[in-house]
Length: 423
Ligand SMILES: [Zn+2]
Image (cartoon, rainbow, N blue to C red; front, side, top):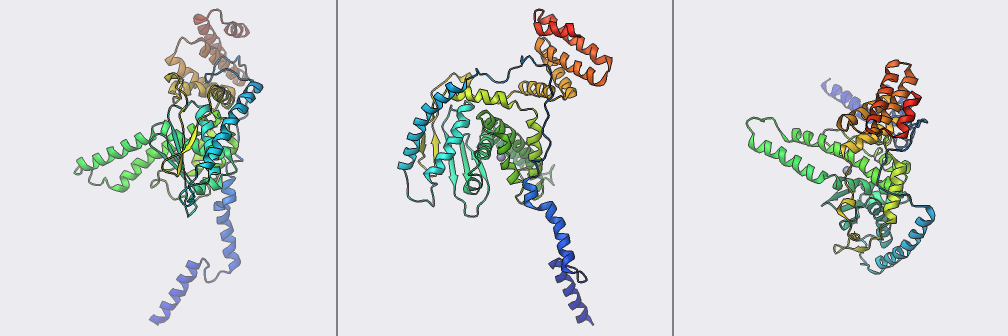
């Protein structure tokens, strides 16, 4: 009897592990599997974000008094002439990379792959004034096809062949990868990570009695919540760097779409956030992007800089993109300040027709800079639209008050005068 029970149990368990209950047929099993595939199927996950709603810009008053970026418009013909001059240089560099070869392709990428990575990175570097240092970019051969990239030491970027090959026909996506890795370095994420880890170790070493349960898993969790935030911001800053270089962010998003198909486990144990959330972070922040202005700014920066030389490095697995000719320190890239970011949020919220958000952000800025007539002008516009939307008189009064305040600081401003008259 005992033996029979055991056999029955074994049958039951093996059937369960196989996925089908003893009384089920395989048709039912596959029906259940179909349900899982809807959730995990890579096609669905790859296209998950493409259907997300994009912002519909509404027509609002905008005398273009809030500038983003420091640039003058370069007309197409002038820009084209500059690009064809640059092309002569690029062709020389291409030849040079080809000449200078080491015939061990187990350790070294092909010259054409180096050249492709160089062109994308160089465009980002010039468009964003990042040419104060030599940048190094490696292509690392991985035999398991791992989709990844990394960065360290302020100016060193590694692209794994698994990622390179997957995105090789999508330069926009590759630009987002390179931009993301540069962003980590530009925003000081290496330094911050080192500090976070050092602090956690110190607490562990010196306060063992107090933090008896402060084990490694706990420390990992604390570190990872911070590291994950840096990933979100590197995605956004990377997108901005790529946008300035004129890359198409709709197409660049493929990088994140592909990551969304990769196996992902848990949140606490990993330094990288859930890819679905990364996609949402990307979409939500794009509402506040001023892509058109950034593109013009990048064009201006490229026009005003020369081709950066490229050579194979002494380690044979990377290239060196040489620094440009020295400029004034102030003209190099700086991360956006909180106030600059707030201004962008305020302006774009207004342009997108999110007047409540616009009101919030413009008022936040006015708390810090209460004498800025342009901020009052846009705040007055914002209140005017809120009044039109809701019919509430308080908004009309606020609109009038904002215009009046603006006129205090700029009595001759024609837009403020107009706005005052309209109200
Ligand atoms: Zn990252």
